[in-house]
Amino acid sequence: MVRGLARRMLLASLLVAVVIAASFTVLIERINVMSRSIQAASDSEQILAIERQLERLVLQVETGERGYLLTGDNSYLAPWQAAQASIPQLSVRLEQLARLPLPAQYSRSAVNATTAYINDYSIPLVADARRHDPSVRSLARLNEGERRIDGILASFASLDATERALVSARQERVLDASRIAIVAVVGGLVASVLLVALFAAYLSRAMVRPIRRAAKLARTLADGDLSARMPETGVGEIGGLEKSFNEMARSLEMSRDDLSQLAQEQGALRRVATLVAQGQPPAAIFNAVTEELARLLHATNATLVRIEPDGSRTVMARFGADDDGQPSAPNDEPGQSSAGAQIIVNGNPWGDLTATALGGQRLPQDAATRVANFTDLVATAIANTQARTELAASRARIVTTSDQTRRKIERDLHDGTQQRLTSLGLDLRLLETEIPHELPQVRDQLSRLADGLSGAMNDLREISRGIHPAILSEGGLGPALRALGRRSAIPVNVDVDIAAPIPQAIEIAAYYVATEALANCTKHAGAAAATVVARTDDSVLHVSVHDDGIGGADPTHGSGLVGLIDRIEAFGGTLKVTSPMGGGTAVRARIPLAEPGGVG
Image (cartoon, rainbow, N blue to C red):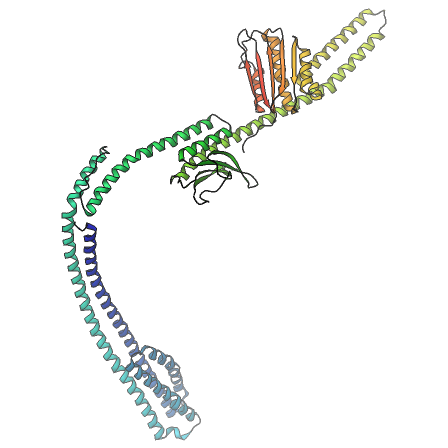
């Protein structure tokens, strides 16, 4: 242990490895020897087989030529030709296999003699026999053939004896190699077992007791005593174990800080989620997100960027120290540490949120994951805003359609029914003048009919005006409010200060606010006078109606004010009713002149 357990374990392991490696080296070398010998023996077996085939084919050539010479029968030439066709291929294979000098010499000699016999003797002999040359049966030519055949067979016999001797020698080498391999394996195994046993005994004495002491202190640490420490008195790896134990204890204490940071992150997410749940404007949520993110990650700045339809990027919110004011991709500049995540709204990329640390500072390793947690909340806020915008637009379309229908009804009444009733009234008055003075009763009846028709026309005119006043379409909101004040049953002071043009749908909504409020003044409030104020301010139309009645109005009772609230909210506006008991009633409407928009 003085020099360290790792070094001793390494030396022991190296010793075992050397013993095993030596054993396996000897084994592998012997196996290679055996493999080469077996392969060489296999080659020798092939050489002997080819040698026998060639010897048989040479005899077949001799038999064929002699049979043809003796009988003149062409059937003997078929095996003669077949043998000649097979001999070249086998000769090439034989020379390829016979690589040792002596077998190579014998094989070349046999192949050359065979080739010479066929080309120089057998083929010419058969050709002469076909021409009926009498010399083919001469003793000289027959003796020449026998001499050539004997030479070929002698070469094949020498090759056969040489290869058989080589096979015997190779078998002896295989046996020797196998014996050496067995000795090497057994010796290596015995030496390895002895070394492992000695090394195990040493490790048991040198490591078990210190590790037990460490395990006991680890249980103390697991029981919750994070202040437990081991005395760092050991040497070598045992000393390293004691140091690691103490570092683990310190790490557990540091984890408390991590839990605190997690609580801060959850608190930041909760505050942003609260703003989202409250339906705060996107700008407020964007500012809160960048601020919370920058503070949480201790970043130099945090930026929320929107990707426009044309691919350009717009900074929607930014918190922290400014750099160049331009959005940048994470980790794209030296000397800065950045982390970002994309904002996905309804499956489509909307923008991204990025936190950046400058001046050599580094963001936490999990910064990208934390940024992604905030982008989920931003996506939810944007989706909610888009949904509210679409709902407001839908309500505005419904209100606009309703107003168009009312205007059509008003036009139909004015251009149709009222004109017809007016014509009937004129006819009755004309008929009244033509009645003789001798018939006063008939004249009186016609006069009453004409008066009744005139009253019906007035009632119809009031109904038509209530559906949609023509003066609103012709003169605008100001003249319509003044006309409404003149027709009211109580004195009404009308104050109109409208500088900006007002969309027709918003004019109609404001007119109905004044109409309903003045009707309530007359019917329910018992008011003696009222005031109507309409003015524009920063692209917003403000309409208010005040009376000096008894107060106590409840906007939740009755359909009139509820319908007005729905109409005003359809255009992104608000309607508030203040009606203390005995203090009169005030109805205030605030309507944006621009159409409701969002961040979609």
